[in-house]
Amino acid sequence: MAGALERQVVFALGSNLGDRLGCLQAGVDALTADRQIRASAVSGVYETSPVGGPEQPDYLNAVLIAVSPLPARALLDRSQAAERASGRVRTVRWGPRTLDIDIITCDAETSTDPALTLPHPRAHERAFVLLPWLDADASAELPGFGRVADLAASVDDGSVKQRDDLSIRLSSLVSRSTRAAMADGTAESANRGG
Image (cartoon, rainbow, N blue to C red; front, side, top):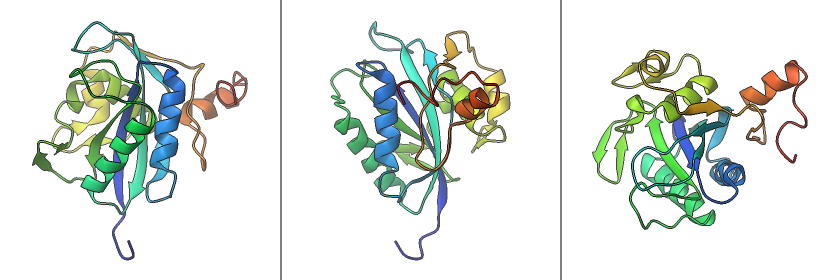
C-alpha cells in the first residue's frame, strides 16, 4: 500500500476458552505477522468476569496498540481471520469464545456501519477495555468520549484484575508489564513458558 497513511489502531482482545493466554498471544501474532499492522504497545494481561450473555468462564483481556495503512474494513477482516484461526465459532451472542478481537479505534475515524462501528460503541463503559488500554497508553483518548484515564476512573472495575504473572510478547518490543517485572526482578522469563 505505497503512499497510504499510517493510522493508530487500538485492538481489544479477549479469551475465555481453552488456553486463554495462548489464544491472546496467537491473536497478537496473527495481527502483526506480515507487518501491515505494526505493534507499538501491548498492555498487561487482565482477568475479568464476563459481561452479558450466558454463564461462562472468566476472560483474559489485553489491548494492542498498532499502526497500519490498512483501511478499517481490512483490519476487521484480519481480526476475524485471527479469531477463526484460534478456533472461534460464532454461535451465541456474547457467548464464550477462544478469541475475540474488537477494533476500538482507528485513529479518529467514525463509522456507523453495523459490521464495524467506530469508535467501538461500548468501549467507554467497559473496564476490561479501558484499564488495559490505559496500561498500554497513559495518555490515550477515546474519540468522542475523552481521556481513557477519566473514563476508566468512572467505571466499575471490581471484576477486573491485572495478572502480573502473565504477559504477551511482541516481536519487536516487550510489553509494559513485562518491562516493569524485569525492572523489579520479579519476571521469571518475560512470560509464562517463554
